[in-house]
Length: 191
Image 1 (cartoon, rainbow, N blue to C red):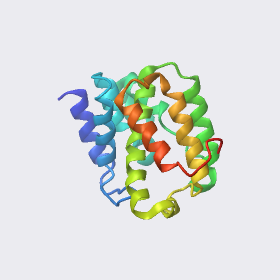
Image 2: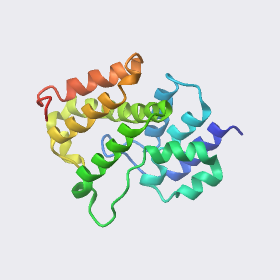
Image 3: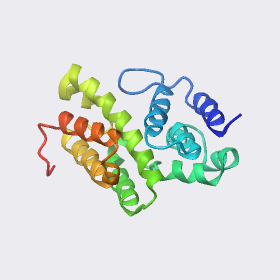
Image 4: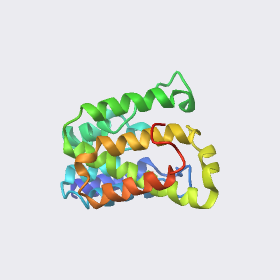
């Protein structure tokens, strides 16, 4: 069994019975989409495996040690670089700003292209989902999110576009940037 196959089986098991906030689809579709997007930019099995596993520590009972034992240091590092600290003493909606600021600082300080590929892949998958919901529901779809203020969401997703802009020649970055500007077109750029 390849590392990628092992990661796929692990992700399916870890996310079983979970659904996405938007669309109520099985959650595991998201990590597979993230891996598919990443595969347009790299064929590195560690990156693609990390794409499948990127939400396991953040959203399941999986621990850093679980990943390290099963997938090694490189995959674990990549997943950790895309994992937000939970700040369990606060509800997710209340800690949203603090969690996003901290993770954006880590991304800004990172020079590892593979981390940026992982971030871009995850956030492009999110933006595709946002776009579908926005087309159907307009800005009311934000009411399903931890952060309901579109201006704060715009700040976050626009900042990511800038921080991963070394990938701007990639079709994935172009699609991401286009979706960000479409979904947040009514939100001022300085928001």
